[in-house]
Image (cartoon, rainbow over all chains, first blue to last red; front, side, top):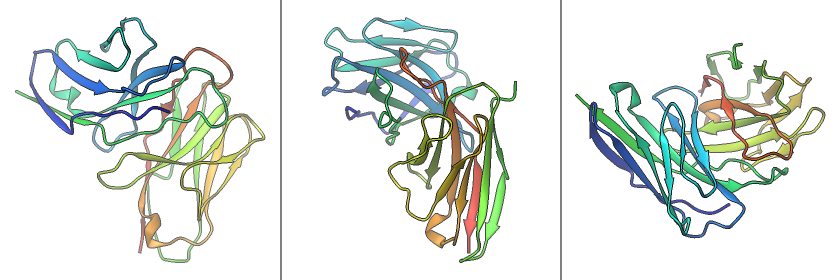
Length: 113
Length: 115
């Protein structure tokens, strides 16, 4: 799976949009971009994933650049409960025995009042 | 629908003791996983089970064994606990099989301290 690079930490004001960047310059054509988050002391929580088109769900939006070498997770109206570590992961589309999630260091997002 | 459940939530062991961490999912998922997370670190895969009846080693399998008891349950056993196994253990499951994307759902974790 391709390696990802994320800033170690970010701050965001409550009610504002939080934009979390991720670089994945070695991504290959069959790899998806996944975002998970981990709120303190809890298990990781799936947020969103995409291949090449922008995606939106009830939690967030995912913007993937045309060359797919980077992406941005957008939380449109951040709340204090969105304070967490956010992980960007790339992995192949085709499921096989070696196709596991690899969690790196992530970005620690602090939402402030 | 409870999702992924884990027991116990907390455990303290002495070096050399054994224990089994239990995990169950009620989403009819084919694949299940065990991860460990050390303080300030990301998750590392210990073992996984792609489907009922199969298990495979992940990134850090040494000192652990697993059993896929049935489709719902996947247990992790420490035969002789060591202080280096002090960690938070997460179980996860996913639908599995050849499909677009592969989302994993995680349990709440088991916090293990080995003295």
